[in-house]
Image 1 (cartoon, rainbow, N blue to C red):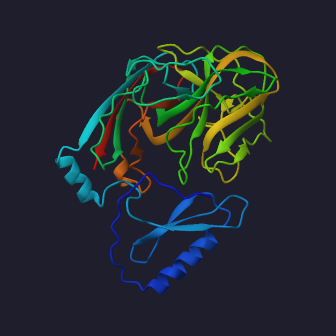
Image 2 (cartoon, helix red, strand yellow):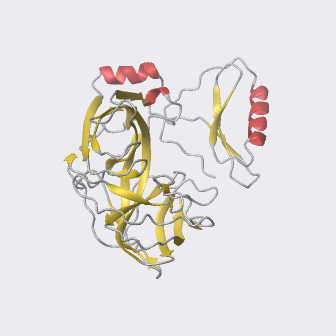
Image 3 (cartoon, rainbow, N blue to C red):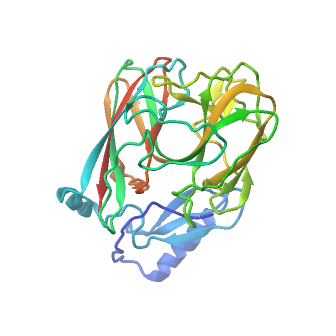
Length: 367
């Protein structure tokens, strides 16, 4: 398992505890992390963060990595972050998408094709990997940081335009790094063309990308499940999506438009009529993928699908008609880095069967 993080400047401070005590704590943490895929911090009794420990599901080996220079967030402290903002190294990006065409509650929908600010994103219509960057149609404009500096998402303010006090909305901001468009749901193997490669989050030691499968053109009623999906994982190894409990394709999915988001089609449970989540499950120990190799379904359905490779950047939850503010600098694992080629969008889920417009102000700092 690779222990990775966005990038944070952290200047080690002195701790009152002897290094031998630290070794004991780290040893105990390594034992405790056996079989756990999560990455967790190891702290000394006086609150000093010694580093990170993580394991793998079903395996006994664990790894420890100390907190080193330029890990986590790009700033030495909250004071440093505030100082950079005071120096003008901060800006806000307005993001507003029309998702009024949503008609089903509790289903994940990708806002990429919807109109607004920025304009609607596009699909290319092939199974060939397509790269996205800041110049792609549908990407919001993000000013670049200076030489030797990095940009980080430090917060979001989200407003839902309609609903009621009982309406809940979840939104996951993501960087759209690549996609395979124009795919088919077929009982013949669909092989991807990877002449190009994903440009962000796939270098050695990075966590890789998530697979998000959405509808590109309307699906029929034919029942079909995913038989297999093979990919290259974040370490460069061949791997497969687990299909023991075969994820079903969502039937009767509508075509996306400027007001209808692209509905997430996999993984879905046809019996319960529930879409599990916005991203595909991966093999044990994998944190992400570099590319998709091929996939196969149990039956053919009249649909065209897009398989996007994305990097989740932050979760925003809005309740009722309120405006929700999220400060990512208060989270240990927040302040995700925005690379120069970042192509931002969002995937959302509503607790009601009525659509709306989604408005967000993204706050970015650099230093």
